[in-house]
Length: 333
Length: 248
Image (cartoon, rainbow over all chains, first blue to last red; front, top):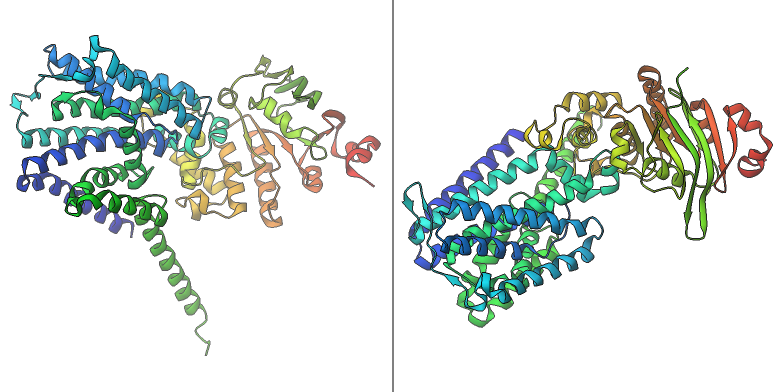
């Protein structure tokens, strides 16, 4: 059974990868852009999934970190630096700011923490809009180029899509490493029972800060890829709405499930596009779908899958018990 | 003979106008099983929380191996070899039984960096499996802890407290809500650890038979104060204790 599930999972993974590699070949320029946006949003949502899904720390500031990463890349790239430098600065800066944003989480939790991060999100937006000497304010920053990686230009939409996919692969491998290490276990302990974790020697303070810092760094990483994708950075995309949207991706996909953000971002980015045929109704259908899903499965899309496997396991176990008790009493009439 | 492993010196804890613990002093000696008894609300759990850093005492000192540990964080005190169980169940329901145990040991080895770059199980799988076998949870090793029965979770909870090889374990009502068979099993395991590893125990318990059988010495609290201390037999015969707690 275990081997079967592993094979199934490997097959699903391979199929997903093949799909991601091949499908843009048949898409329009806009379709490729949307797929690239999906990859970027998945990276951001994966970061929030670490902070919220694994470590249980609510944050309404992930969009702000995407903004910080975007601005870092836009500002430094227009000054002529090769992409790797702005990328590292975006990640490093987000890590440091995320670490600082973690401090309130040491004192407040849940919706109080949500409000602290919300305030931070608004503050960052105001900096983007008002600090014109740095961000050019509402006029935004443009005129920076898409990166050239090992001599290969990513200027075309398709080339940039594969670049996004590669960045997504790096982020995925990184997060998989984190959550499978003892840190991942400590994060889950922090989410499930911080008092008990503390009594087992888990330095909950340090892990809380780390959860914020790493999650935010991934937000900054997403931003660093977002800037060259849209090739124009202004404050508009980085309002609270983006943070809420990323939060929705995490929850709809399945908070605390590794591949939850992939599905959640797909719903948030792709579904509105597929629903265009419905014109003005698309938002209504979209909202109804999300509400219906969360009523049916509060643990999101992957929560549904989880429930199915658990049910199948229970059924098989009771069938085995029934068979065992039947074979124990063969003389029964 | 060596000095006491733990000294509680005149510990007092006030919550607003209420004094939950009112100047309690006692010692815990290496290798003993000390019982703390007293009626509900007499400050037993508050005292535990003060010793283990969950609460900061208003006054008084907690001395571990001759070092003042008053006000240290619980994770610090735990890493100095003192672990605990809680009155209410405290396992991690979404982690498997084995993962619960690995978690209970991982922070005692290496550094933050080695826990990130080192092995996934921090090299603790053999120790976790040994603990699982010791508490006879073998068939449940890969089950999520949340799916276990109450008694099994209670055993897991105790196993977690022993995972890092602590010198001293504080058990807050280990017998509460556990059926007789499971209780006998738990008692026998505790005795075995005490005998084999020389681990020191402090036990809060309401089940008098359990305390009288298991403990070598008993401290009695009432209304935040220590009213008696001695062997189980002495305490049982003490008139103040009978009046305050045991009755008849």
